[in-house]
Image (cartoon, rainbow, N blue to C red):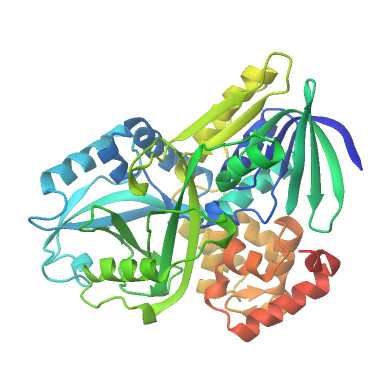
Length: 507
């Protein structure tokens, strides 16, 4: 079957870069199609440390352009999606004779405060950990610290909301659809796809964007028949989730004796997120999982700081991902550049190909703008940059108005307890009202699956956000997997199977 329409752009990859480019492009008037072989954010984009940050440690590697761009993006993204992005203060303990001298850290934080056009985020300050509550969970040897600002993001929701907005603006968004082949036919690309149900379809496009993340080289090799392709360096990053280690709303930035750093971050109210690791990875990105070595590393590194050690037995969940870093020849994984590289291919008269290498969550919007410059050069410019002043679905409220949104939701639906209302606003913002609808009590939300997950939300996620499995819902669209028992997960799986039928069995 063929899609007769000729799209301006066909994007391969439904991670943050692919979805960000699709959204920006369709908003400028380009016709866009995007294919993701699995679920949105099922690869790298849901396995981050979930920070919107400048990258303090990148200053050590003289990545000043990247850091400045990232710092400037923090408040732009916060304003764009205040439901899934919010400010967070970080506590950086230090001691005499530590990995980095205090003057160096202070200099780095000074640059951090002044490079990026900070307006709403508070500046760096010094802490006396003997008096400040931030010192309570730490070993008494840590008496001083710096406190600075960065941001938190629900990474997987950032991806799916970009996909949703792109679809709402007219893009053809194809989840669980693999690109089988892509070949040039003169000035056009002929793209053959196959979805999870085994259905084949052919698309035509004036330009192809390869935003396949860890698979970007594989796409070039398999889809285009290119040999000896090596543009990205795959680096594994793993995280552990443990029961809450501290009550403070601030996160911690820990420096390890080997020069690496880890974060300890409040997570989903009842937990603490600890990560990340950095090690080269050569296997199939889909098979990535935390190793015993990484578990030991994270537990030991955190235990150097916390008065109460972190033990493997404390772990309630882990996740791992593979970062597709542009291969700049760095000797160590943690030293490889986090910057992105965009390369256009195609001779005169040939349909152009744009390859996306590297990138990070914080700079995805700017990466998309730079990609649109390349697309404009190749196809002719349409529209102007527009995403900086936009809102993602559900994010149309003030950057500092989250508490007011929760209050308004509970006022409208008094039967919602605070925890439930807070989570709904964190996930969906103003769209929470569309999910609850005319419900007058919790029974009207339908079946309760566990945690704060009800049938009305599940149906919304399946109808509006391409969710098709329990994993999609519990670990990417929400984090309710942390709160459901195995029996409750099975109940949700059976329910989805009844609705999805053959679509689910095809996966």
